[in-house]
Length: 207
Image (cartoon, rainbow, N blue to C red):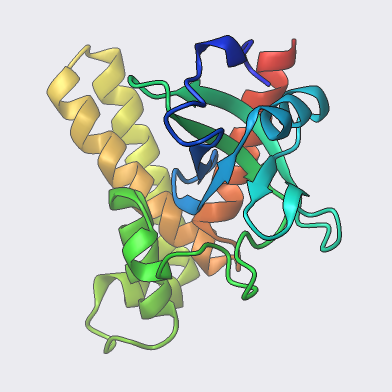
């Protein structure tokens, strides 16, 4: 866990002994689930580094105890009213009891422009475009794809060498786009890239 979490800050009385827990994916920022926890559940969470909740029907609930879909805690943050907790986690499998990755509609829950761009590239990779699509041409033509990737990296380096902040922003956007196309063309995904970054973040927080 990246920082100490003070249970004494929480107001359990407002919710008859419970606080609301909003659990989000550390890699993508997507909301995975919403549940409740009491002091015992959060004490177990802090002690183990894995999420525990309090279910109205199941009692104390260690997420993943039976399914192995545990949630490794990166950070716990209390809200301004101290009656809710944001739990930032690395999920070890689906969060939803249905087997879905998250308890909210996948398309609506995906956060940010990078995720939406990755979805568009994935659709193009699945044939959702004719041959005139630039993304489709990049996916189909390895030489073109690698040429553009190299060009954009070089143009970003030149812009940085010239201390041209406006050009750096534009060229960085171009490079990120072409990098995402390359990742997809090689059979990988944005999620895998984000998982690597999140793992490095977690390692740095422990060092």
